[in-house]
Length: 119
Image 1 (cartoon, helix red, strand yellow):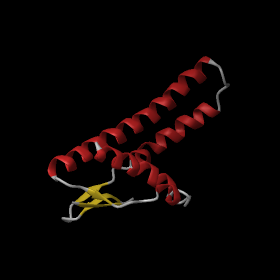
Image 2: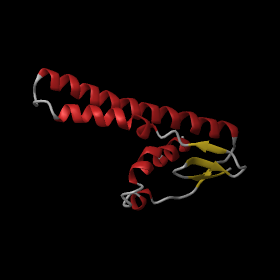
Image 3: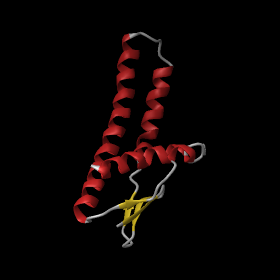
Image 4: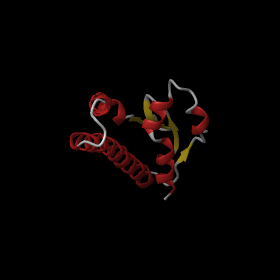
């Protein structure tokens, strides 16, 4: 099974199946932006600042957990369904240098997906 990864569609399989890109960071970006702005306006070290810092950290953790769960489920599904899975060899480090696509590339998590397919 050949797999082509992308930004708009997370993966396109050789049989024509599309795996949608959930864009977890994009969905929570508004909440995250608001929470970070609120944090930046507080006095550092105060109790309210510490509470708000925890809120910002929880949002980041939530996005990371959602992405990790998605990658585990998709990689398990592909490994279970197909005997061999081939993914295109991407130089993600070079692709991230494009500042317009960097956030979307990191949000997709292609590198982590390939790692999870290996085990």
